[in-house]
Image (cartoon, rainbow, N blue to C red; front, side, top):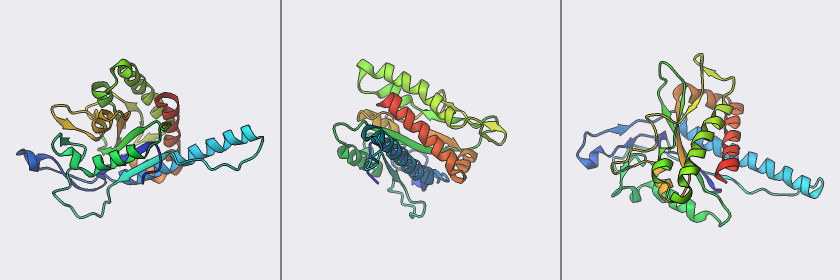
Length: 252
């Protein structure tokens, strides 16, 4: 659904064919990651609701009590149905080469979303992923390397990418203060293997967005944390609020 300048995506909510079938490498099917579509949709909902509430409060202050204001939607989303039959021609858009990516549903949706924005809209893309529960931590990997490697505005890219990197950790951590999964703290990290950037001719969804001038990162969320977010809508709203604040304070 396209309705605002923050774009939340979750391609791995269904099984997708990895690039191997078309590159001569070993065939690989990327399996479905539970709850990612739900989290993307609910995050978009909460982001738009938080935005609406804040706009109404601002309008009340300006009009001395009047609440007759309709705030615009803030967040769009794009997810893949978990019930869609597997089709080998549906290439995983998060691991794709320069030849194939313009054909992907994600890239077409990305371009459609960008074309819907007004001059005053500030775009921001967040890609939701799932990872396994590791033995030693419940870190959320903030895959932001595409910003460091490919941000197309070199005059400000380095400073902007570093600021977004540092503050994304702070804001993600704010969302999970006091929260534990399997007796482990939930924390955001940007120095991680699942960095959102592969290079060597392979494009992730965040790389594709960044190349078009859209600030972007991916969130690789452990299974137990995804489950907790899916069961606790207040916690999910708290995550949305911190993403909203990151967008307002850094991206805008």
